[in-house]
Image (cartoon, rainbow, N blue to C red; front, side, top):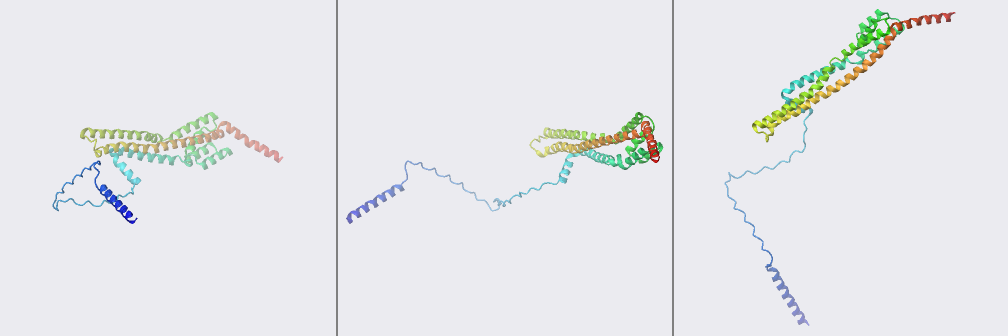
Length: 296
């Protein structure tokens, strides 16, 4: 029994050795890998000709600083070149006349409330004569006082004549109030046209450089003309938009003041016309008769 077990163990050991030897041999049917190409020999160079070691790259700064608004304006002004002269003149004129009209068209200056209230009250109470009323209007000197003075000069005339005199005086004052508005509107209209001219001029410069020097691939040669083309349009719009807005605002304010002066002028017509004076002169007699009746 022991001999049989020993023989079986030797047989299995022999099979294991044969299998290990077969695994160690290469497979004749498998493709043979091509040998890797040998690296070329490195030529030895002297120490003086060796390439310097590249410095370690520093990480880029990810925080981008945006230029301030003043810096952007200075850059735009520098790109305008000779177009900065008309744009500068338009800007100064626009600021000057818009500010002047805002100050002149204040309601307290055109229609001073204390003067209007006192003047109409004195007329209603019959405490003013023609000369006194005219003197008060001339001393005040406001636009509404000038309109009242035009009607007072027709004191005692029919209401049609007095009203026509006030209308004529009002038209003259409206023309004075509208002074410089046409200039402001002109600035708002011409500034974009100057910007458009600058755009065309800048593109012409760019194409001229392309034609003469072949600067299609050189962005620095084209940057000046393109900057002029874009900046002039932007500056023209920056001037025109505020001027047009100011023009519309001032025109609307004048319309409101004119409507208010017209209403006040109608009240003056009712008080100083022949019809109004006759009606007013009849009131004291009625009040006196009523007082005498009460006393009786």
